[in-house]
Length: 458
Image (tube, rainbow, N blue to C red; front, side, top):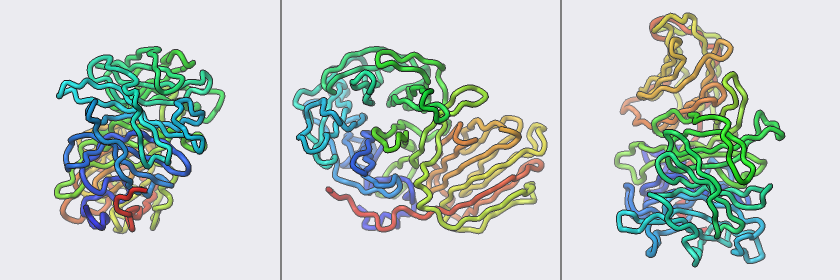
């Protein structure tokens, strides 16, 4: 285990990684008593994917994280601990509380199909702010249903005064279940989300900030979602499948329960990153806040980095009204290589293949083509159409990741990369013609690792 994680060459500086070993899906996201709890799939004994347990970290600001002792270890009776969620049982419906403070209750999949132990759903509870967990003696609370049914996401539905859970079943099928006490569950509906699997999330959001206009979001592990209405008994979709995450590396996103101020904050596993010779393997995305916004094509989910990133902002450079071309390039002054970029540009010509906007980031080129209206980076495209004649991008750049948010977060994409072995400065230009840079703000981002404590138990 490294004594100083900030010295690891390929360790992200403002994205969560474990001190050591493998992580994947975020689990059990819940806010309680001033702490954002981040549980996650964790291999406590190896650098690659292996026997799943739940690792645990907490933060007061979604930026600086402190790793705690592992929360849930593999179960001798049922098998590994797979993905799941956690809630604050304010009304002590489960009976797990001690009268001092409401219990935290985690619901998770456990199983070892390869060893003949099918996946079932279990619960565990904590009476000490998530520091220690007790598995329920009555597990499983949901027996095996079909295939590898897994990844329960639980939310309290106040109008019906009961818990509602989304569970992945099989193929493109997701089940909705209801319970009065987190122990006894009844299936109330099955919903199909085409081309989507695993890791559901289910939550309401106001449309355009209007509390009288609400839609429910059924999210899936692939970053595909459906919008609809929900009355506590039935989810009525109002859209077909919509794509929010267009990148190759954003996966298994989950949102925090009980977030203060009614916020809906989400974090993803940035699946597939490479970190050779590092003591850790894999990273999380930077947390984003989600909203529903009405646009020309209807109501759509938007994502944007949480405002707390401002605590890491350093030197800022601003540029405006520049014409870019293959020879007229803009290279902001060098810095740490960690950036929060905001830029707006406009094509000068729409002729096919001309006036391509280009931004070189750590040796990798992000391009936007006027004829396709799409951003391309590392072999994957993301829609980014013109809005009133311009395109606006927000780009977060860390040691090994780039996250792109287009037009206020209407579309977004997560990318992992290995930096070039030489210094590759930030550079903006145009290819095969000219384009106009309307505005650019380059904010250097400081490391959130300085003084990061080693794994602790409290």
